[in-house]
Amino acid sequence: MNNITANYGKSYLPTQGLLVYRQASNSHHGHVQAFDVDPVSGHPINFHPLTEQESRQLAKILTVEKEKKKGFLRLNGLLPENVLYLDVDQGRVMWYTPPQQRNLYFIESLTIPNGMAPLPPLVWLASKNYLFLFALLSAEKPTIDTPLYYAPFFNTNKQGGVCMGTVSVGIRQSSTLNEFMAAWEESFFNSYFSHLFDEHQPVQGNIIQLWQRLIDQHTDFPLDVLVTSPFTLKQLTGYTDGNN
Image (cartoon, rainbow, N blue to C red; front, side, top):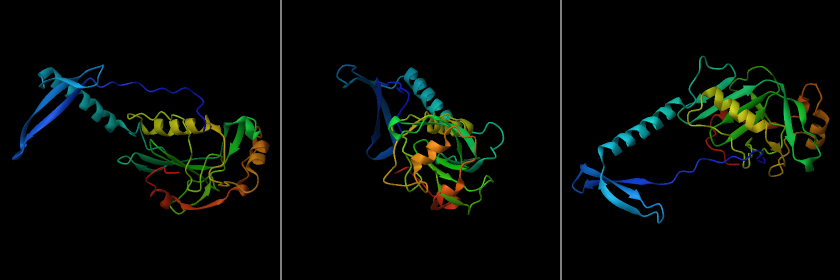
């Protein structure tokens, strides 16, 4: 998908480094030296034993990073009813959304106007780095053996993976579970649909004509156009990366 906002990350420059020395005959004995980094050449300078102040600064940084990791995908209350699978260690979440109306965006060359459109029930599987998306025939909460259908959108592939292009989803290391799911949904629906991926046809019939017909129509999504995928929820939990 095309990025619709300018997303720039913070810049970090190396200023200091650490060297750990150990005795060749005893790995449990050693000492730590610190050094500064020359801002012009980038070369290490001013080697010196780690000071007490530098030790406190390092401990503070490590504590903050540890707390961030502990906070990732934490719950604010009860587990949301739409969550199907949660793996905090791997940083993965699977959830579903019921039929809904969402505002969709399309690049001009598709000749599809932007606007509100009906959507089928959807199943989402995401980590910080990838998103898989599938559709359901029923609005009821799916079970482990529920068959999945391809999500009826552009920018998806035969494995259900979503090509997000240069879009920055904005998942933080401290994102709660609710923040994580909301960030993925907002990033997906606020980006522009642009192309079919690897000749994958996610619906029966002409996908352009389908969305031209559905935009600004306050009707249910026509489930008969969905295409069966070879996956179930059980198989989806085995996905470990977002290779498209």
